[in-house]
Every structure is written in structure tokens, then in C-alpha cells.
Length: 192
Image 1 (tube, one colour):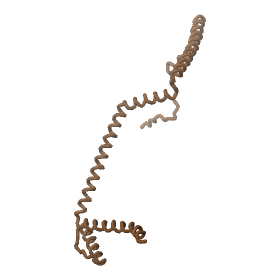
Image 2 (cartoon, rainbow, N blue to C red; image 1 turned 120 degrees about the vertical axis):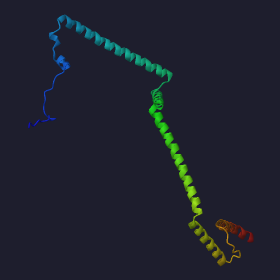
Image 3 (cartoon, helix red, strand yellow; image 1 turned 180 degrees about the vertical axis):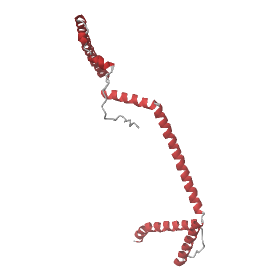
Image 4 (cartoon, rainbow, N blue to C red; image 1 turned 30 degrees about the vertical axis):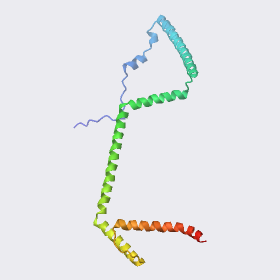
């Protein structure tokens, strides 16, 4: 069996010159006549002069442009603002921007709907909890504790009420005690 070796990346292979490289190596000074050389030199000088003239004209026009802008009150900052506004408008009218905006809008609406659904689910769950045996048991224990405390304190009214009534009476009693506490200093002043 012959062992065919694959070329290695580091193997050196002679580079082949392209037609352009070959053309660059040709010395044209031997091929063209003295007349043609003189003509090309004149054309070269003429082109260089035209380039210098065009640069001068361009510089003069740029100076004139700057003067007009100055007279109109157009500053570099205003130009930057206009360029930025124009660029921003171009970005906003681009289809990729519009698609992204639509996608984000839809995502926001979906997130809002999801949050609303979660809120509804939590509300429903709390409502279900209110009717659960655990909550009922807790409610009964609170009622029993309140009844026991009333009996120990000496309350004459020992009727059992609903959880809401107990909370309401507790809140009412708390409000009265805080109101009485704020009236005490005034009552003391009247007595003196």
C-alpha cells in the first residue's frame, strides 16, 4: 500500500504570480517611445494641477458654506441634533425596529394579562381559604378566646358572635380606649 501524505499547512509551495503581478514587473520605459513619455509627463502635470485647483475650489466652497451657516445661526450642535433626529427617524421607520416594538408591546400585554390572572387566582385562593376547615377552626378558637376573656374580665354580655362581630367590637373597644386616653389630659385640666 502506498502511503499518500496529505499536504501539511507548513509545507512550502511556490506562489504563482497572477497576470497583474506580472504586468507590474514589466518595465514600460523600454516599450514606450520618448514622444509618448513626454506626452504622459505633460498629462501627469496637467492632472496634478487640476487636482490642486479642485482642492482649492472645494476649500473655498466649504468656507462659503460655513459663512452661510453662521449667518443663518446653524451651529455644529444644531447640525448634530438634526443628524441625530434624522437618524432616529430612520431607525424608527426601519422594519426591524417596528417588529421589535410590536413584539415588546405584545410581551407587555401578555405580562399584564398574566399578572391579572395571578391576582385573580390569589383572590380566589384567599376566598377559598376563608371557607376552609382550617380557617373555620381558627375563627372558632378566636371566638372562644374572646368569650373566655370577656367572662374573666367580667363582661355581662356573653353571647357568641361571628368572627366579624368580634373583630368589630375589638376595634371599637380599641378606638374608645385610645379616644379616652387622648381626652384624659383635657378632663384633668377641667377638674383643676
